[in-house]
Length: 343
Image (tube, rainbow, N blue to C red; front, side, top):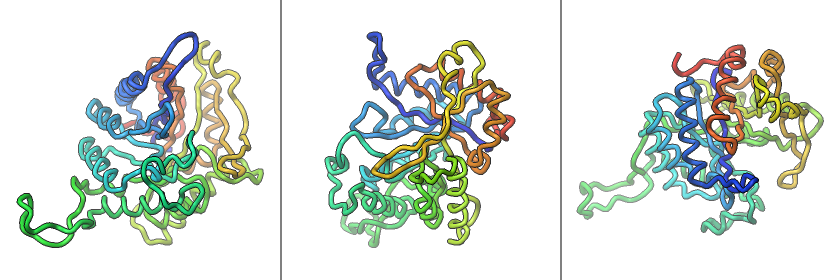
């Protein structure tokens, strides 16, 4: 693990006791937190995307705002649901944010996770899927998106247009950001999906759950998935080394308040059913820093990945979350191989 950042679910709504966190509060606090993390040298701020829910659903304006207020931190998604996306419009937006941030975009996309509605992507106008979960639609959209960011011509030029140059042939999407392809990630929840990402030549975001449940510990299942991804990348003949991220709930306990919130949160892997499939969910880590370091060193997937995303309780506010992140940066991350951006 050389890098770490935060993965925010961006929840807003009632907090209990008559308190309310609005959508505006959620986004503005995310910007403030990213600024604080940029000052600490944290490597990334990433956001989950969910539609029809009180969470982030249109992340590009937020990422652009964070990029404008920071200088080093990577801004990204984990992940955008490609079932809901116009691939060419997403290509335009992604290129714009990548250019505005000087190449700091880490665009995580995938088929997406279950939503609060039934086949919500059809309400967005994307119909015709033959898969009950819309996986075929997501792959089709992703293929066109990659062609667009690669600069492939996709629309016939009009030689008679007063806004053109009289040229003929196919025109690419604008703006175009060179190198954006190397900053695209696929979120995979199983080994087959990870291998597909390796063959396709994009980075891997390994999910917070895996649709496998054979009794193997979650971190070992995830490490096997990462190995399969890298093997597929090499077999496909792609140049360089791909990046790999994993997500974890990790809370260093350094104060009485930490113990109040997280002292009883240490648990093992969980088995559940999602999308009709038995799945393994990773455990929560919560301990004093020295103990936490030893536990995380034994996590095979964290050792294999280059980037660790900490899932944060964003509803608890900027000050609380920045303290959690700072505690991890000071007392835990250096022992795991972390390299802050300001280094």
